[in-house]
Image (cartoon, rainbow, N blue to C red; front, side, top):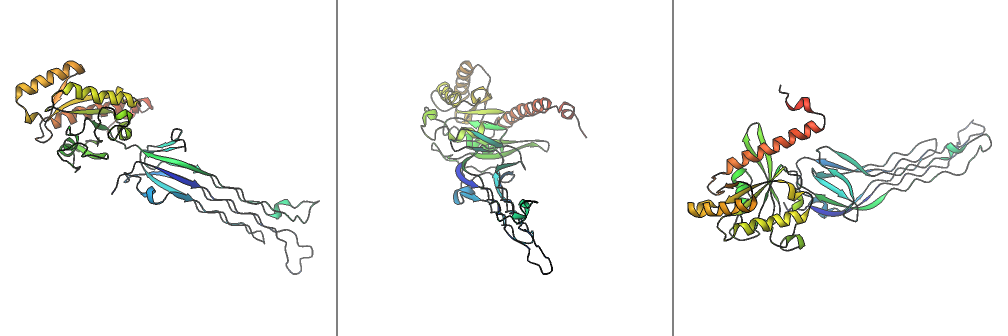
Length: 348
C-alpha cells in the first residue's frame, strides 16, 4: 500500500429541502386550508479518526465529498427526510487545515474522535407555517438553506512514542527491524527509506511503545535538499528522539551537528526534544576507533553516547528500555496535568 501523508479535498454539505405550497382538497371539508410540509435538513460532513489506518491514500482517488440534499416537503403536511451525512474516516493523528495550509481546524489525535466540518442547510418551511387569522391561504414557502462548501487540506502526523533521526544510510531502518517486527526496506545506498515506517516495540507484556523511522536528513534539508523536512512532522508528537549516527564515517561530530541543525531549523520544538545518541555499526570497527569516535561525540554533544550495532543487536535493548522509561515518565506527567494523579499510581 502506498504511503500518502497530505492531500487536498473538497467538501460540501447538503442543501435543505424546499418547503411545499399545498392546500387540502378532501371531500366534505368545506374550507380546506394550507397543508404544505417542511423540507428536510441537508446532510452534514463529518470527519472521524479511526484505528487501523496509517495513510491517506484513499483520498487520492476520491477527493470530492458531498452530502445529500434534504427531501422537499409535500402536501398533507408531509415533511421531507433529512439528507444522509458523509463521514470521512482518517488515520489517528490527521490534522485538518484550511485551504491556506496553515490555519488548523482540528487535530484528530484520538481514536473515535469526531468533528463537524460542514453543517447541512436547514429545510425550508411549507406554507402551513405561514397561515394566520389574516392570511388564511398563504401561497408561498421557504426554499431550503444552502449547504457549506470549502477546500481543506488533510495532513497526517503519525502517532509514535519514539522517533529515529539521522543521516541517510545511518542504519535507522536496520535499528527499526531489530527493535520490532517491522520489515522496512534495507540496502547499502542512501535514501533507501523514502516514507515513514512504524514498528511496535514489545519489551514485555506490559512494556510497549510505537517506534517511527523517517527518511534521512541531509545538510540543507530545511531548504528542501534531499527529501527536505516534509516527513519530520511524523516525529513531532514523540516523547524522545533516538539519533542514529554511523560510526564508520570520518567525522561523526559533523554528522551529529548536521542533523541537529535541521531539527532546530524545522521548529515545532523538535530541537528541544530529549535526544538519545546512538553510535551505530560499532561491529565494523576495532575497539580503539570506537572509543575515539565516542569520546569526540560526547565532547561535542555534552551527553552520554550509546554504542549500538543494529545488525548484531548489540546495545539495542538497552536503548529501547531507556527510551521507554522516558515515554512512561512523559505519559505519567501528562496524566497528572489532566487531573489524573489518583489514576497514575492505581493498580487493580
